Image (cartoon, rainbow, N blue to C red):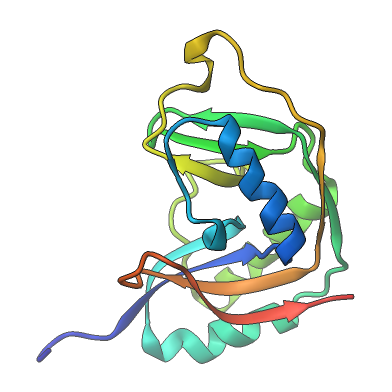
Length: 176
């Protein structure tokens, strides 16, 4: 490994509690494609991409500097991103508090000199349910479902890239 610097592929996310995770996993039956492992279901706030190991202490501590109350989310729609072929679950009207939290997180990252990877423009909060998915409306209709309530009170720094494909939570703050 001469000449290489250890790097970690990281993102900040709202991390669901076990009951919410199970409910999100049940939504996967409504969409086509390769289901994301249930253990990986989350709502990304900031994708950081590959970051050097020496930034880990700063990133691990960053959530503690954010003042936020638990959020009440209502997952009430399915959607599709054509470019990456992703089927997702999200909110018709994301709460202002969620948008504010994401904006403050991005500002704190910028203040710390940490660039978040391209978000393709506007933050569109969602939970990826399946990858390599065909368009959801291919069959003419998309299944409806009762809104799924999520009391989002866990903000996590998560690392991807493990050989088993599962994400590893590096640090988490839990508000109650």
